[in-house]
Length: 132
Image (cartoon, rainbow, N blue to C red; front, side, top):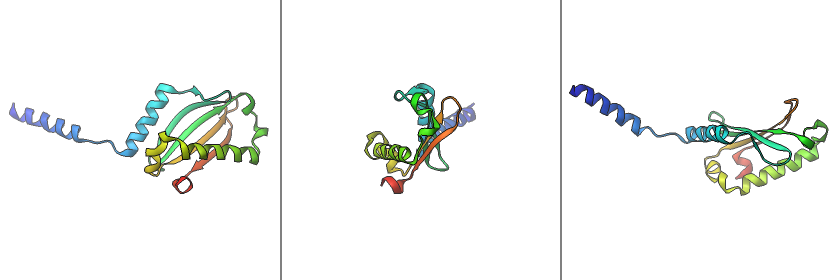
């Protein structure tokens, strides 16, 4: 009987001492946010479909669907993409919610897809070298 109690105590001790790594934490937070909040309209043209943290790339991926006026591949000129890129960079630089991620050198990817055809319109990738 005492062996079983010691065995159970050891299991409890080892499982209670396990700490989540930073990467596991970010992956779990992204998964929880996706389950609880997504899809969520961001504005009149964009829906956040999901977040995915890729531990091997140390990258937080944002997946968006675009609709209405933005669901038209003819508007995705270099100038339009440049404006989008600048706004996303400004958000990364100034968003206090991203401080911990930036301190841990997380990269950010933004994927934009057509809500009707599922065609990828844009992909933006920001590394710590760009925002530090």
